[in-house]
Image (cartoon, rainbow, N blue to C red; front, side, top):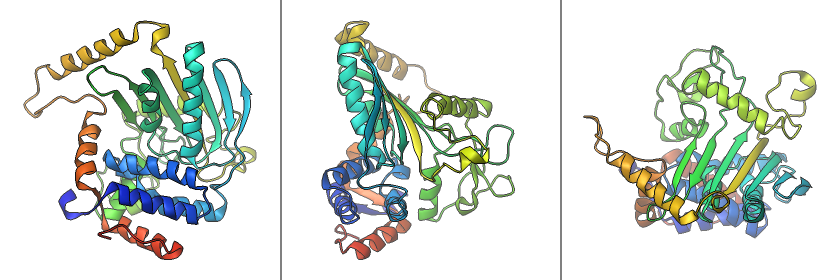
Length: 350
């Protein structure tokens, strides 16, 4: 239960994160972008993509897998499209840049479609799709990394559990925001289970023998949601990202495999200008009606309320903004180690 976890004010946690990344060599503005995405995930209850990632990122910075000061370049560009080589930048730094560029293109071309090559972990992908929704556009964002999920019928990793995020604006209602991995559970949820010291359902992952496991420390392969549906989507996202930028991450031959760096990702983001197709306010009003219609449907005996995508996260955000972000002991210990390493004071309560 969250009540048994240590709650930390979000602003203090963000300040701590900014100082740690700055001490690790990340320019302060970029450290603020990275920290904003992490804390935003925690505030929405997506703890798998929050501050528990800090030790992983610091380790990648130490090893040169994640570059604090990359040489980000726009490789090619048209009126509606662009390709960015991130040079292993911190994911949020290059992805916020990419979505802002997609939004600007959509204002004139009707759509902005951007591909990102050679980035690193981007955090919760809904952050980027919602950037477009906040500009009264529809937003999409997806990512592919080296294999961590067993395709349907396999017992070892062969695809990545590529997430997809889609957001559209409402009028009175907050944006509808879908953010889902193609696995039954995101990999970060297993990391969060480790930090909490709890078991996982046996439908989430396979161990080294290719058998279902309830021990998050033993997992070697995530499992796709919906069997062939989840792994099929994951395969197609690789085709729309990694293969599209000439940087395959899933193919097994050694010449390709030797180029793969753990933590490397390829991604696409898109912004769609709603006004190109219909009146924006009418669209947003229709989103509100759609939400109201869904929520007014007859409920099952087990359901107290019908939720639309993003609604639960919005309510968690309100609670945690007021009452702090709950952290398990494993995450707290990792933050203490970062505090000691960089001589950055811990937030109050830790």
